[in-house]
Image (tube, rainbow, N blue to C red; front, side, top):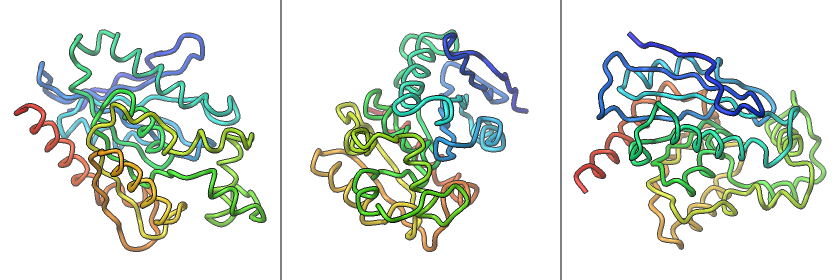
Length: 253
């Protein structure tokens, strides 16, 4: 049975909260998983991914699903900074031991995957991304005539949430995953459909950037156009297996 502790405030100033899903049995060997929900920085919340929190806990991870500010509350880089603040809170909290940074892993869905990349490069957590957008500046530059529409096509939605979160052109390059810190970037497993919000070529450009910087990354390309949570159940075991494999390697090392 999974025990859920809800609405733990991790940032007093913004009153942002996290839920924690505890496995049936915990010990000093229990690993910690952070799950970042998606929604394009315009929707989504921790309650919408309760099912995944239970699944991760059942796989043996103490799982934390934090909130972060959406675009109607604050613009870029607010959500990114919330993610950093959450990790700092977690590492200093009673839910972790002083040396637990090495015991933390991440999974992020959609823009939650984008934020997981931002965190991974600073803290070194092994990370899985489901359909993480990686390119904004180049995409926006080449889609100036595309309408921004929350309920429109994939391209119209992509433009809508990109501009909702980062309305200033000066911030678009900063939002690109290739602009994030990578000094501490650890093992990375990226899952994407062949026809994503971002083109596959954009993702391959990012992976090429990581390769040139001698970073470890695996890519799984799925047929079709399913995005993030649309294939989450099907590839959840594969994602967890990757994280367990990395944990075993690190333990042996």
